[in-house]
Image 1 (cartoon, helix red, strand yellow):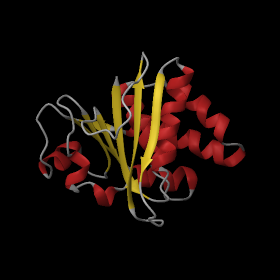
Image 2 (spheres, rainbow, N blue to C red; image 1 turned 120 degrees about the vertical axis):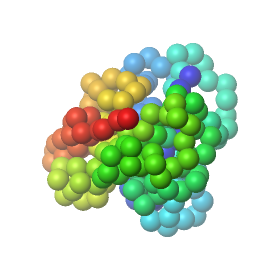
Image 3 (tube, one colour; image 1 turned 180 degrees about the horizontal axis):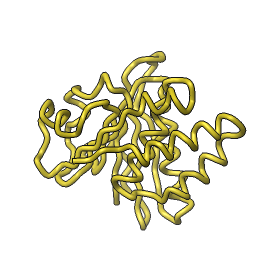
Image 4 (cartoon, helix red, strand yellow; image 1 turned 90 degrees about the vertical axis):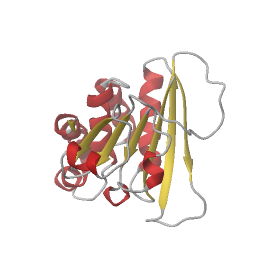
Length: 184
């Protein structure tokens, strides 16, 4: 089983990103869970979302405390202690950050075995979508770094959810995110 925790702010598509991961995994025959963690917060408030993927039935029904993968969609949250908390050894920390993975690692307390991936997802979103929706580029970086689900599966899920120019922008954002992630 692989567990993913996503951090961002309300309105950035963090919950949608967790659901897109799960939907792509379902296409590949996996068992999944995807769920948010937030209260009555408004747009812009910090939130988390979760996804579990497994080849067999999932019998756990709780929040993810020790994720294999952490995705930080909102770059202002890169240094929040809660984003790195519980991250598994040999896990992945994938962050919307316009600097190098080495630079980011030097500012965080991470196990040396953790793989750090950075991506200027905000820049990609502005180019592809014309708005700061960094969730789709971050999914591209996730796929490139981890192979958690297939690129084609996620593209197919995008096609089921979006149409027209919105689909075109999200497909471009996914591709650029896939090509642009830097890992160390």
